[in-house]
Length: 177
Image (cartoon, rainbow, N blue to C red; front, side):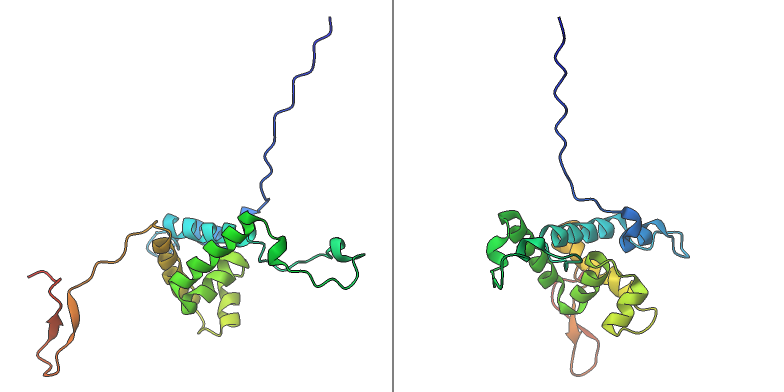
């Protein structure tokens, strides 16, 4: 009696991504003068989460010809109508994340996390001063981690502002004595 071959295991397809090409992976693996990684694990996770939503939202520009439209003639088509529910949800998450960090930091996140630009390249594209990109990226990734709930919100110091008679800082009541 001949045995039946076992069914092959189901393979779940996931998008291929070369971790070695990610600027975030490079920053996480490098150490600063103090011996700490250039970005923290939490910052790395926040940046990767944004990148995954960017990829799932299909926001990247096409680099190849779309053969679906080759024989269709001049068809206008509504791109959002052709997106899956998952892609639409990913776009909403992506835009909500960028809105939460503000436009000043969102452009740095988009360049480095989503478009895989290096920090120097992002500085040039965004017209930032040389050697400021790492600091801006660090602030952006921290704000993004806070949006995703990966990092705690900063504590208030209790100083609301300076008094007019310049006697010192005015307390908002939240400070400690």
